[in-house]
Amino acid sequence: MEETARIKLFLKVIDEPIVNIKKLMKLSWHGIPFSIRYIIWKYLLRYIPVEHKRVELVLKKKRNEYDSLQKMLSFEATEIELKTKKQIKLDLVRSTTEVPFLFHDKAQEIMERVLFLWALRHPASGYVQGINDLIVPLFVVLLQEYSPLREKNVFEDVLEDDLKKVEADLYWCLSLLLEHVQDHYTSNQSKIFEQLTSMKQLIIKIDQPLASHFEENNVECFQFAFRWFNCFLLREMSLEKGLRLWDTYLSDEDGNGFSQFHLYVCVAIIEKYSSKLMNMEFAEIMQFLQNLPSEEWTKCDMDALLSEAFILYKRFSSSDTHQPLSH
Image 1 (tube, rainbow, N blue to C red):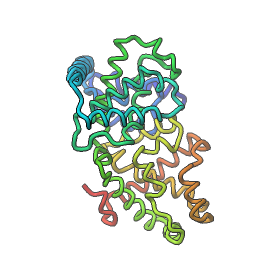
Image 2 (image 1 turned 45 degrees about the vertical axis):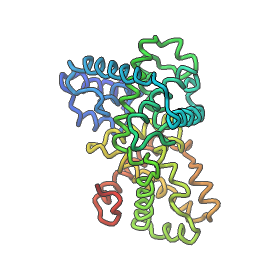
Image 3 (image 1 turned 30 degrees about the vertical axis):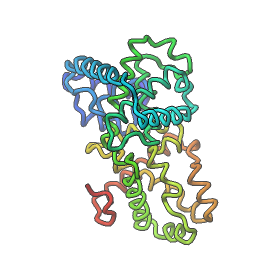
Image 4 (image 1 turned 120 degrees about the horizontal axis):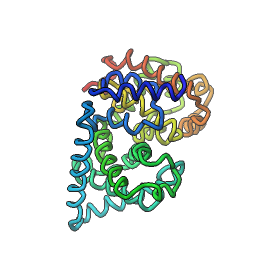
């Protein structure tokens, strides 16, 4: 179906007095047109209410609340807080070079304020590397509401008041996203290691020859896949493909797209290259899996990967054989 026709389908759903979120999820699972992604993600993240007439009111309230929270940051920072701020700054300059505007001073300051406030309000986990990657897709998508550009001069096009709205929305959307995966970002990141164990167990179940080959070559999932879970594959593919992946993650009816379905996407990637990996030894396997040829993936490849992951998810997600997945 062409893009214009798909946009019409989405608009029909969100123009209803009460948005049918299940219908919206079903549509979004197959990818969201970029020009309307900013509004659809706000619904999928439950940032805005399904009642059409309440949307503006809720947005105004959340944006005012964010302003109040930011005003609290004007106090003297402690030594630990200064250390957090320094780490955030260091991580932000390593953002993806695909999006030039991320390196504009204004963008760096917005992301720094958002991440620092989130860290202060979530002392149990605080700021952990990896969270800086998650802010990028959200920022790119939310800024789309005010400018389709991604160049460094995009800020010349966007009014200061609109930038403030984007910043507030960015904070709340990031907070809502992290609610589902906050245990990925505790100091020891134990949830990620749980998922890596689940990954190994799944490979044993669905591809015993590959599991044995990995064992013979001393290949462990954490050696190549830690980053896959820490950054939700954003560093393994182009931003466009990452956004497409997140459309599906955000469309999971039970809200488990990031916390559970992602595991099966990672396993589906391994399976996609199973026969190739069988002919490699340790160094080659590592080199290949740490540098996936994702630039070759077409839209059809992405759809096939997600469909394969969904089949695995439905087949194994309630299985007793990998306990780390249970709540």
